[in-house]
Image (cartoon, rainbow over all chains, first blue to last red; front, side, top):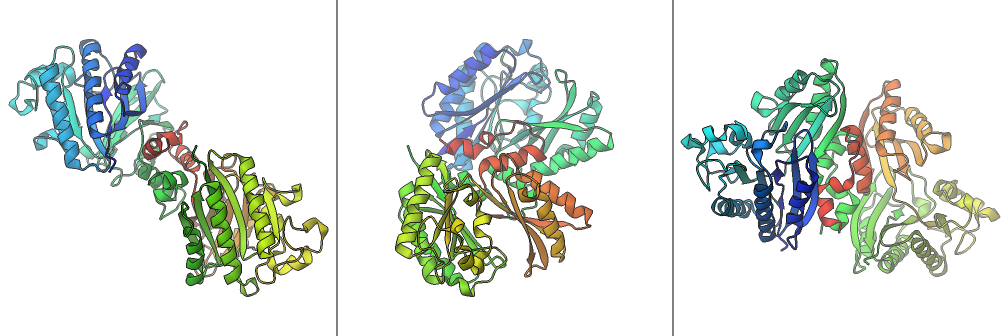
Length: 299
Length: 299
């Protein structure tokens, strides 16, 4: 038994390098934690860290990162394309090896309680850890963002699971939970008309009767002079990456717009990679264990 | 240091299950060897085994497999679509981890000598282990096949590196060598006209001024009622899978023929997988270390 949990915190700072590095240092200061990836987006003004370790170590690293984020980030001064309600905006746990979903939920509850009690931070539990159906979905919790949080929290429906019943003055609130692996995938369009990106986002997302388990937003990428369909694919087994990508290419084409490139934020599960390969080069039975290095190293 | 070598022997038996299993059992009888994959093709009448282990263990397993193949397979009774000169037709070694190309070459020489001396089997060294430039290429060594071997070996240019100067009466000859990872990839066409598969094979293979490091043959798949472009991609870094696949789709289309499906024989390196993903979903900088499980398990 070698229990392994992944944690993928999203922090509301993607521009100031010294702060991003200070946050990273908190994570890697915990012995036994392996930081797999971190990436920052200037337009989103947001960073995503990916690390793995035993459940106890992952809890410790997530807690230390949250403390540092609350210390260094003031959301009153934060602007970015991506919706957010907190300095340490969302902290998801994902089971990788020999950890049940229940254990992961207990991990989220444990972290949430500590953040509420020690940092005076309101905490919402989401997805598999949610305390009520209307709180499962991250975007419902985040609706209104930091700026609307004070008003939102007056509604008893949005009483936090832990911590005070009003926003932290500089750090807002935090969403902690447990979910299946998520793919953060963006497709950049060769147009400055954000209306086209928004139209495509609506056409593909679950909320508007598109693909199941797809969340999508149309955004402007000012720095690149492009627009973007920014997505979370929350269950690639039901809706694979290629299905969404091909649909975006098709819809963009109808508007005379070209897909310039895609972006992957963080890491992607190997089974999602194998789906893509299977589809495009017509290998109907292709599975991850046909990949040499994975086959050697997985046991 | 945890030296790891891969061995991918190709044996001239793909139909009789009891023989294929007896061959497999020789490999797995060696402690410390991990058999990653084996697959047999009825039309080719050929099986490919893939195993890894320390250099010493891999040598031992390859030797035991060769002995059993010579014992059980009589090439005088063998028919199949794939060219072959021996019962144990070809034994390539590939460095996977902490093993230099030179060490791999010495491994090939060590095995070749043992096969020549102990089994009375003529052995040709090929690719990186070749003793002369005209012997680097497997298809040059194999030209004329088992049936033409006796005549071919009368030519001093084809004196074997080890063993007797005439074919083994039932097991022919064996080719042993060292190479970079190879991808055995076939594309099946929805036509019974083998001329189209042969035309496409000529258009894409290096020999006829197609893509570098591509070997290709057009074959009939009698069992499936299809034809096949059967390929070895011997350096996917120079000529990636997607480039070859897209070209075959294009050439087939010109002839009004559809690509039904592809087949992968054995295993594929993860970097070749990442190339495919990068190309089709337009992720220009995608690298294997963005794949979650690989990133976790590779160290």
